[in-house]
Amino acid sequence: MTDPSRTLVVRKTIAATPERLFAAWTEPAALRQWWGPEGVTCIDPQVDLRVGGRYRIGNRLSDGSILWIIGEFEAVEPPHRLVYTWHLESGAESTERVTVRFEGHGSVTEVIVTHALIATEMLRDQHRHGWEGCLEGLGRYAASTHQ
Image (cartoon, rainbow, N blue to C red; front, side):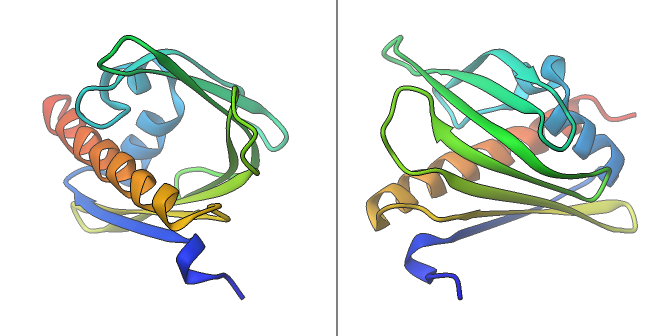
């Protein structure tokens, strides 16, 4: 059973297809445009999109420091589901797990991010801020690149 104090679920409905949003989540050129909450800039995203493939995303914070997020893909099921490990490259934290689901409902898609195995409630709350900001950015990206 997953400990609710160590798990976070964030959802957002976006006017785009699962295919477009899955691509935005997994293509480095798109990630640069929307990833991160306000005040964070995505730099040098690297994605080897296959089970066992790795990713690395740089988050440049407003103070100029950079946090590198790294992990490995455990499930890649386009355009509906991704599962990957999550770890700060410079940190000693335990490895966390992120599941992203893209559930199409007509002309919109509900994006559901489940972030599990979070070490502390404080860190969970920080992740909530980050994921809510990411999903807001993804929504803006989808609206600005509407096809």
